[in-house]
Length: 179
Image 1: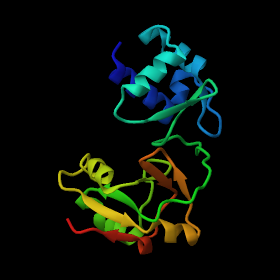
Image 2 (image 1 turned 120 degrees about the horizontal axis):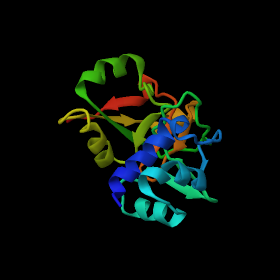
Image 3 (image 1 turned 45 degrees about the horizontal axis):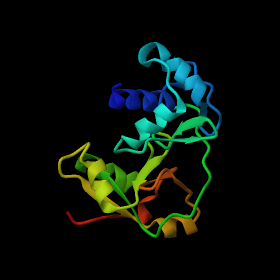
Image 4 (image 1 turned 90 degrees about the horizontal axis):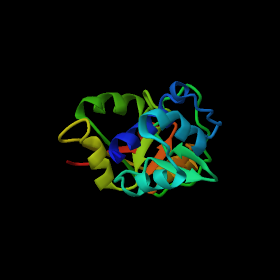
């Protein structure tokens, strides 16, 4: 079984097009594993919860979680229906890696989710650099004063151990790090 291809398809279904797979997603983004397995059966054969756990263990990216026989993507949704999240106090500082070409817009309007539901932030600089390199070989790294933003009413949500989410980050909480 091609774990990479299957893992990406699961992410695609849960993040972007559950309707194409006839998945009944609840307001928090959960889908029954049995339903997902049935949706992918023609292409990949019968998938069990153990198979999905195996895929997750072999992936270098933690894209989704399993709980009570349900699965959901941690983050990255582009669905029209906004996935509900529980606000949490963030670490003191978070980071965001981006392409140089986006810097002027960010410094004018702040960080916005664009075609996603939330702004993605990294818990450490190394992860922000990796993310930024997807868009620019020499990305700009932004330091977010997350705890101050949180104390001033900006909501943050835990994505996974290295990713935090926010609805938006106003410019007063953003500092460009020297490259």
